[in-house]
Image (cartoon, rainbow, N blue to C red; front, side, top):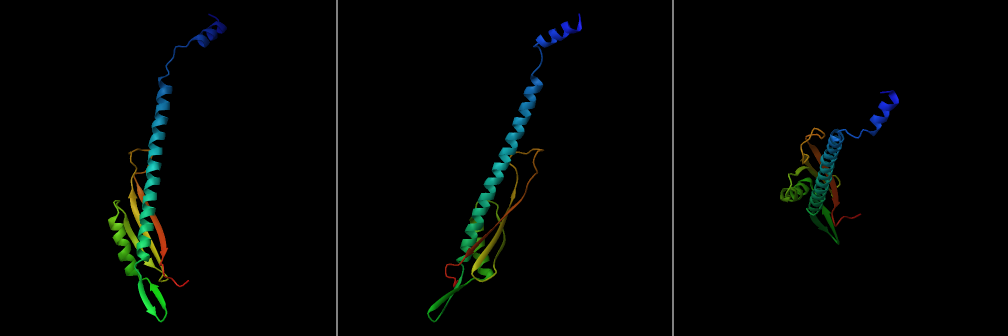
Length: 146
């Protein structure tokens, strides 16, 4: 058999295994599913914690002390009041959200920091075992003088 005959015979030979190709594509598809599921879970968890932080900051800004002097009313926040109001909201959340800090720097703005430990929904060597997500929200009192 000459070289051109052998080449012609090999080019017409359709026997071969597609199993390695199918397995390769299946592995890529599984990896994409795992990563997409983790990214979606991470996004949803971050949005949830953002909502808890915003609600806690809003509640914290409502914990003001009202002082009336003459014809004007002044609302003043304290760190303790912001913490008390924010911790009530964070405690009522269904997630494992932790209140990191709740404070006021100017007496009219509540600043709340919360965090949560996130873990991927599917365990995989492609992803980290988990990490901490944080969110910060601010809210001003309704009766500020600015």
